[in-house]
Image (cartoon, rainbow, N blue to C red; front, side):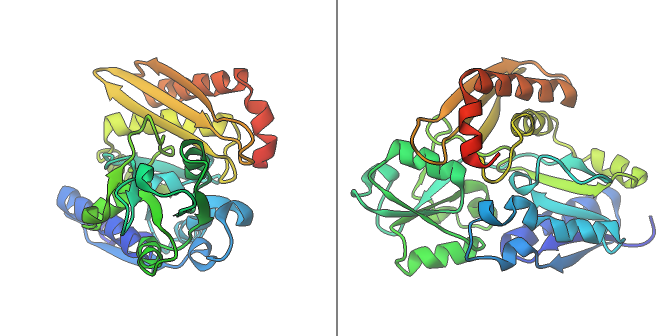
Length: 310
């Protein structure tokens, strides 16, 4: 391919870091010219309404997909947790890279941990998944919406609008901001979102030669874990309005998948389900996720889904 590869990316500092990381991988692996096409998405523009009320995380990828579709870009780089479980026809995930720390991070200027917060303290998060788990852990706290890119969220914390905020550890570490982390939530206490900490590369389905190249970048363990996690949400009709967590961890050659479905109203405790297996390919990994979804249904998920707007 003689022409430069064009990567469509959001223009936040974290998104640009991610795109530059993939650019450097492509240059090193294939010796090709790579350029970035920075874009502002609807998800970046709408900051006064929660994502669950305006279309979900797909708002962060739609404009990038348009650039792929009309030929302005060849690939798009996403935080995998922001990628809808069902891609539009004509688009595929060509690769998932090795996962960074998948955990959630407690960030505060004054308090060392969630347990150290006084009753009534204000905690900011943009995620229903985090909100239901925070309420289960500390029902005495005030959980308030927090929108904006990572730097904006940290600025709002530093301005004193919140006593603490919860962010993905991966983004902080990638931008050299690990020192802002006061505590990390163990996954048994705060289960991450499907795909959290991993980068996904999206292309047009008909870009056969490019897909073959990008397949060499796939991190096998993360690829299988991500397929298992994403299949849970897909089986439940997942959307941004569903407080769903799914996290798969390898222990030897066994993949352990833990899931959680919360009640957005807060009236009921979250449902949990766990499965394990030894998937050899993406289809087997997805089947593991579907098995976890069946367990959630058996535990009463149908009563939770209408409350989530599903």
